[in-house]
Length: 560
Image (cartoon, rainbow, N blue to C red):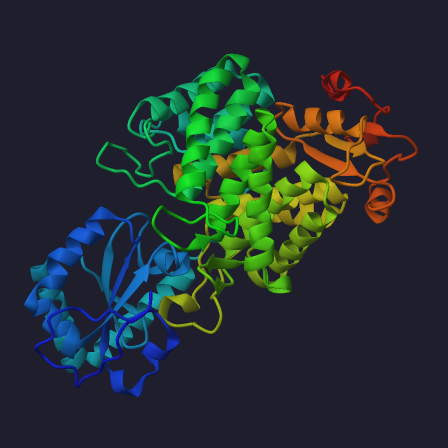
């Protein structure tokens, strides 16, 4: 967002509209604004409630006047700056707060009507003028309390974690989110749990048949309790649900047809409404911003559906979205930028690194192109160097040099930590470097101790990854003598079948003895002939040359 027309204490008191400013360090160092309070509005730009507030409270002359002469107004798109949202806002909500001149939170204004805003502004202006020492002492006391309440509880990794999360998922009444459905699918595959499979199918059918899906234009609606009046369709939601639909279709041939219809409609919407000319996906229709988590999830969903439904065009589109991040949003050893709208923006957010890393590994497993693996290893190094804390949790870091107010304090996302741990587990299986798995264990031990207090979607993700790291899973290594991208009559059918296997968890690699010689040696893969070998519980099985040999070989190798 540009503008934000410069203004100061000399701004004309008869201003007719709010002159919003962007969040930047300069706003808190500008001598012309010294000692002046800030009003911070944090909300997703697509939220209908935001439009309503713009047309009511922020057009009220009393509010406009105060924001022109006494308080500096700052506006933040929560999707562009999730670091600010987690500290000052709430997901999918309009949050208006008053801040001190150095960004400390004074008050969140509940139900910010014009009257409520005027009352809050006047109250804090009076306190700031007459009781500043007392206010500063209160802010310092709150900082001390926040530091003391940071996560410190650790938990043992136990198979019971899956049961605890399943009990919560089964008892919750609201419309299930994608992580809850993924947990049910995982439980079915891990334990042959037919009840979990039934719940997963019912959840997705309820969403598609209800207002959670647009049957005319395609695409999943974002709202937690969708109704026809909520027609917000965001890229990340499309990617997450495509990923889930691929899982259901791979699991159940009976579901294949109705799932394919929903997938096709969603992909049509994505390509017509979200795809930009460079191969990336915009966060929402009508916007220009590409966000790393949204683009990464859509890439993952397209790759997964391309595999299950044997659609090379969907796989290509997914890979192109991954390449977009590599070419336009990657900053080398500094990881991934969060946003891109012609130029990259906001470097240093954990959620962007984790999402990009997972999509890169998906692209690596699908293509065998070693660069994707190397890029992911760069992200793993960054996670350890920049985000890993003494408590073993990964903390969202301050992007750049904007350590102002609450940005000085780390924030921990259980969902991002779970995704990061899964990323590291996958890297461990793909490289046989146990340091990745050890770090994943440490992260999960730090986050699993508070499982019962986590938001349900995060708890489901944590439990699924904890169970994955505690379980034996097959690694399928396919030796190809044609380079990646070229036809190999033995390796290609094996590769396609390995990717389609409906297992709780597994990794797939297409290896070339010459191009991947270092990795082949590191993995100890027998590479004297083309075919597939399964690495399970520390041992390689016999060489397989036919796709129909894969699943029986895995079933024989697992202990009963």
